[in-house]
Image (cartoon, rainbow, N blue to C red; front, side, top):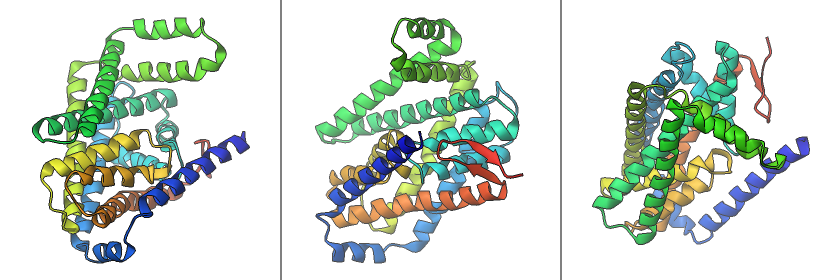
Length: 327
């Protein structure tokens, strides 16, 4: 079992190495260093502060989704979210999402599967929101066909997930159907059915239209904060593009990150930013400078703050996302 986990981690870092090799192989390092050195540090710092501020909004959204379980304070939930992000930044395949649910379950004495399900619903709203933003952006700006295909495909995928979640929120039939199918298929497909059941249980948190609207509105607020970070860092490196360009950067990077197999989406994030800025004729070295610093502005502070909080709380996290207290 340990060998399997170590193999997954090793493969994720091999993927990182390959992606960065592909990104750096045609880079003019002298010009790249020039762009990095000329970055406006004050604007980058402002971007970091805006990014960290968004965790209060994320905590409020999670509070709404957890309302059917209990009443929680934003100041209690925000550091748990940051801790989950910190773990995501050092371990592959978004293990931090499971860690976040496990920490919340331990600290607040609530069901870990139900908590994880609420995190899963968050991701549906994130995916749906950024896919819709990308679709609207592309409608008003003449992008290349491959970008339009990506936008419509992502929008359709998350829209279907959202509709399925709504049906599941107000009816037990989908869950009953999944359980019926589990008995009819071979056991090796159990992972797929486990995933489906978690999804459906998570949808139970959307038990009213008021909650659905509130969650969608807060998701828009979260991504408004994120957009501000992209605008600030782009301005720091003198990238002169319309707001549509920053919206496409935001959407491309985060759609890729939702399924990235690498820690913190390393390589995937940078590749998405470089790809998104290509439509605006930004020099390759300048694109890479923005991609690296923008990512660092997000992952470095959350990783440091998250692990300091984990250390202060005396929590011990294993590679399989189990949580233990040293007390």
